[in-house]
Image (cartoon, rainbow, N blue to C red; front, side, top):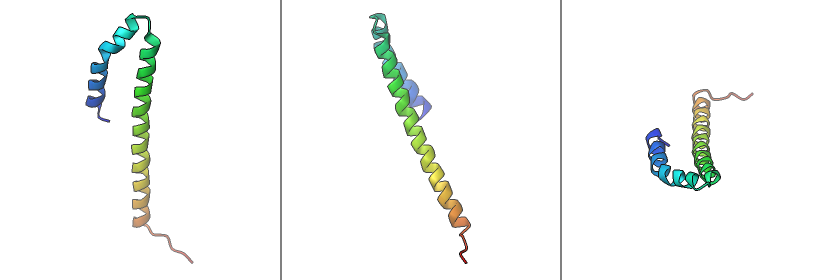
Length: 68
């Protein structure tokens, strides 16, 4: 996810999260933020795994193994 998209989502959600915080429901807003960042981190991990997998297959194509 791009940083600009993350910032836009956080700015849009700031008012409702602040409202929950003022109503003594800060735990709910904290939970929602934690879920949001968990989803972002899972997406980034998937991207890294995919990049690692393609890098590995590219290196295997460049250096084929010789069998005896």
